[in-house]
Length: 148
Image 1 (cartoon, rainbow, N blue to C red):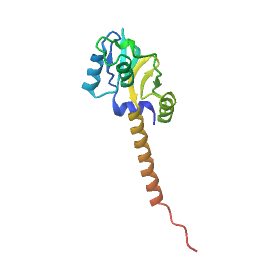
Image 2: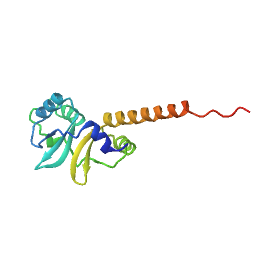
Image 3: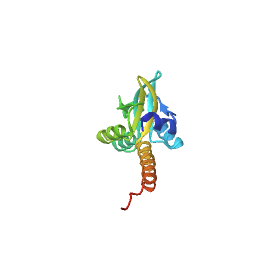
Image 4: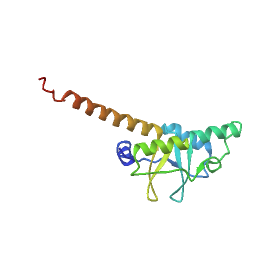
């Protein structure tokens, strides 16, 4: 299974915010849409990624006073990205090796969507379940050997 297959199932909706927006606005968007990341966009281009991890780090750094903290002060600039033709195994490795839970997906320079580790895990389980089903069918229909 490839990233493009996961995005077909999930959809490519991208939730974004500007770099000059304040963190409380970002938190509201994330809670409102039940998401864990926002793509930071400026002039139609991705300039960073904001996840709940960066927000929690900011809460700690600013001792809870994040009312005047801007997104670009805490976002991950130039985040690691995946490609449409990457396999699920590649995505899982990239996310695990780099300790990231959210990965923007690009087709050349165009942003196509964002995959979460949850999306990758769900796709992996679906693929394993399908393979398991096929193997069970194969074993069930295994031709009996002549007992001479």
